[in-house]
Amino acid sequence: MQSATYAVRFTLFFLLLIFLPTEASATGTKTPGSKDLDNLDLGDPEKQSQHLMQLYGVSTGAQPCEKQKLPRKSLKGQHTLEQVSRSKGLKEPFPNDFGEWKNQAGVNDSVAWYRFARENAGSLKSTSSPAPGERIVISAAIAQDSMRTALYNNLLLQHYASSIFNANPDGGPVDTVAAVSWIQYLAASGHTEAELYHANLLMYGIGVQRDTVRAVEQITAVARKGVPKAQWALAACYLNGTGIKQDSEKGRYWRRLAAENGWAAAQHSLGIAIVNGFNEEQSDSAAVQWLLKAAEQGYSASQHMIGLAYLEGFEVQADGEKAVECLTAAAAGGYVRAMTRLGEVLLAGRVVDRDTETALALFHAAAARDDSRAKYMLFVVHMEGKGVPMDTVLAEQYLREAAEGGLAVAQYLTARRHIRHVSNGVYDSTVVYWLRSAAEQNHPLALQNMGYVHTFGYGVEKDLEKAESYLYQALEKGVDEAMVRNSLTYVYLYSEQNDKAMEQISTALSLRPDYASYHDTHGDVLRAMNRLEEAIAAYSRAIELDPEREYYYYNRGKTYAMAGEYEAAERDFRIALEKGYTEAEAELDRLIAEVETEPVSADTEP
Image (tube, rainbow, N blue to C red):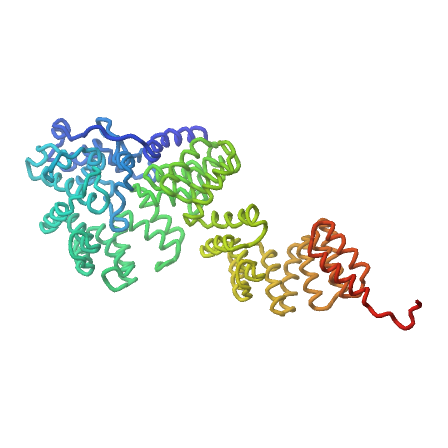
């Protein structure tokens, strides 16, 4: 376990250099020098591909979670494009175009040169009015023969595609006209990659008149050539109804074809669809197999899912070290959710030795990329002082940011903490806002609480139908049944369905017979049914179990008064008052006034 922890820390040392905010900036450029080019065996594509893979770090391994999948520094020590972009305040430098379209690591030239572009394009300093080819400094030797011309075309295409669909990697203005012209030129010559980028231009109207129908036609033509990326793009069009009539059957066909042809994004999507039974026959084992295929190609989202599978023993043998390896690989690939999940694993210290320092660094790295779960975890560590000084102010700030980012558990806790620390137990509009936000995401306890506020009209209009709906949803989500049944008791009690109310509280008591609050609720139902002696016995049992709860005395006092046992009622009201239950004062005054005005019987001696 210790060796695994060291391996994780060693890997994450480099990961955190890349994903933590940095002030580093590039100070020069790197070009493939003549030595690099001379080593290319242009007569043997296989040797050329192997050389490019070795030179630029393209992996062809078949392990789902290889540890070396970290963005490399260039051969002359320049910062990676990710670091350069972040130092300039840019967003993700090479996010997926068209949803999940991207080059896959494999044995082909364009992938290797794409890696080269990633490593170098962002560090260039553009001169005034550079020619298109000079925007990325590449040796003129690249264009000396047909094969090198093809490589050059691919590299320039990737640079322009990146600049137009994302942010210009060198930080300068985007030359849309030049980019569109180059893409159109290569697309017209039958360059497959350019055809797909041109379809992207048409799909979103970038530099050309938007025409989604024509875009889909172009994607279809490439897909029919057997290109997996295009097959996956066409699947997405059919599944989403983008540019073409929505057709789930055709979408499934093209997605499976792309997956079978090795496109990782399609394999991942198919795995997720199968595990959820969404437009596919549900099968956990088949889903994991597809996710494994995608993970073996370095697809970060699948590596994350496989890491979770190893962690939970889901269709694979539970293996903590493999789980950590996969989460580490996914995190190193930039998958933010994996950073946070890996941090949670290291903080817990159950499957590997606890590593609080690395966990905190991962949380900060993910939070810097606006991951709400990471912000929530920073709330936890600062609130509890785990590896950092306890700081409730900073903790509350992280919790608020996580809630505003849409994390349901943070929204629920924000509501609960507002009740406790701000509104003094009152369910005001702020509380209801956060509870509703969490409930809309099916947070179980938020659903239960929304049932509560609608039952009693706290912060919202009283609505027993909504209350009933929320509470049954909470029950379906696994909230403690006794607690939900107790809440449902009041929904039926207030709607004068006493028999249903009795059914609910009887179920709650059968589950938790020694819970004082449920005996108090039982007393409320019995009193509503005018079974006063039984109600008094129920309240007495609640007091026996929890003698400090002031309103149990108040409720029993009211029932004694209804039964005409005024002395017992007065005693209970005074006890409730002594314990701080101010509502008992009005009842006590009313009781005294009622006793004083009670007519004297004729046979009563003066």
